[in-house]
Length: 187
Image (cartoon, rainbow, N blue to C red; front, side, top):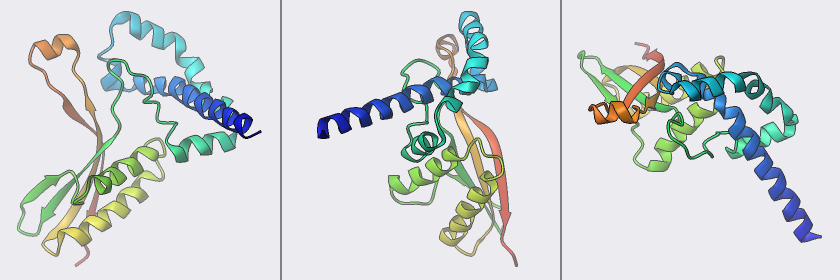
């Protein structure tokens, strides 16, 4: 009985991962990624577009919640070139004297920095929730940065990988800003 339960659980878990990976092909539709694809890949994605949009709706709601909270809905299970990167968060700290600093995060541990990126990744498709999450991190950065910081800007974006041809020509990984949320300290 115990083995049957484990087998059933693993079948469920891996089917959620497979469906999430298929649905993540929609991320290829984002401009920086689609521009890098060759013509055959572009054609294949165009053909799959109607199917990809419906894929996550195959899962019942409890399975979608399971995928969301366990991270199996990230779609980073396929190891192939040009998979879009996860969102990354930067903070621009503007001081009262006019100087500014761009920083990844003020947290001292990798776990702390990953917590910021993960929370923004969870809500990257939820336009209404993003400013709330950004505000919570902005407030925390104000607390950590000290009184000299008057404005904190939370910058969301992703790294864009160059094609192999562009890489040979000298192009390198670049950051593509998607959203910026500015928060000003009250006087």
